[in-house]
Length: 138
Figure 1 (cartoon, rainbow, N blue to C red):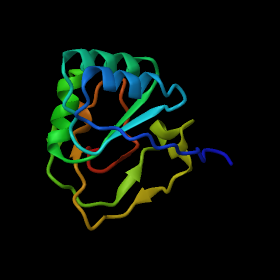
Figure 2 (cartoon, rainbow, N blue to C red):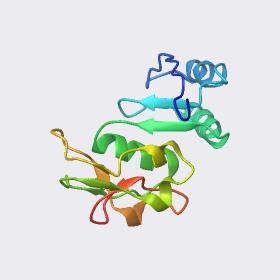
Figure 3 (cartoon, rainbow, N blue to C red):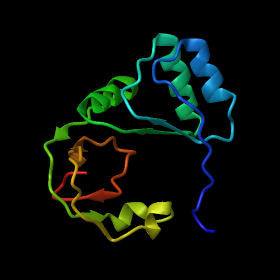
Figure 4 (cartoon, rainbow, N blue to C red):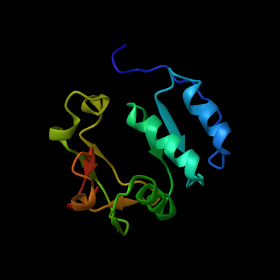
């Protein structure tokens, strides 16, 4: 089916030693995405490996709150600015979702029972996109 990807889980410990990170990332060439459920604690060599892996076209998804946002700023040199919880709904940004799996998602996401962490749209890097946003927050 269109945009229904097979999911393969490979355990990914955010506190890897340099050689463990290299094996996990590079030995699974068909795994396009790394998901972090907490801020990664990479050493200098692991950070270089991770940035090279992402630069090769792979994806990184960071879950969590403001400590994870800070980790993304440190890893990638971003200057993402967090915003306090903004209640939904959050509307799909049709300009940014064209040609992505998000284009087939709902027009809006309703308010959730858990806090949603966001950033100001102006702090997203120039090559970044907001798929769902509200009131200039993403």
